[in-house]
Length: 241
Image (tube, rainbow, N blue to C red; front, side, top):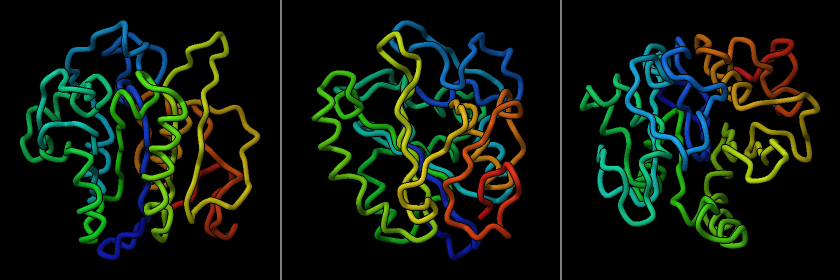
């Protein structure tokens, strides 16, 4: 997505459990993946470390989390219907919870279409499907059908990179599907590097020119798929808006 007011590209991520350890000091929570441990078997209290909310705002960039089934903006209850707070990472950062203006940036997914129509999409958007559409409680076919309806309007927005990512595997294979879509991505391209969720975080950070949080400083960003001319890319880095 392209933001005319800032002349910076925008990035959207569709995710699951969330960026629980996207902290300045990952020792604050004892996990070894950027999304924390499996979300169904672990409870995380609010943590005090920095998140993308801090680093984006420091660069005068905007962010929002769009959560399907969230009853209202800033609601911090644990669950309602097919909505689960455990999949909305920003609600676990004290620097979001303690600031009403930030908390109001966690909104129901229905707000996304209105923001898009009004030209008010944020620079960074995190979209969290509900427990059915994320394929946790419903079939893969159900989730695929939802994506088929939901994604096309976003993929037409200029200057857009959309990542569709799963947070964890339910098999012995630790790998998870990850797609990069939109005008910023070359058609039929793929990355040959070994990647991780930390690498996705670093890709987002480098794309916006943000400082690297936690373990992303040691991760490999997504490269080799971007549609920007070579002169606009640094070797080994993601595209910059």
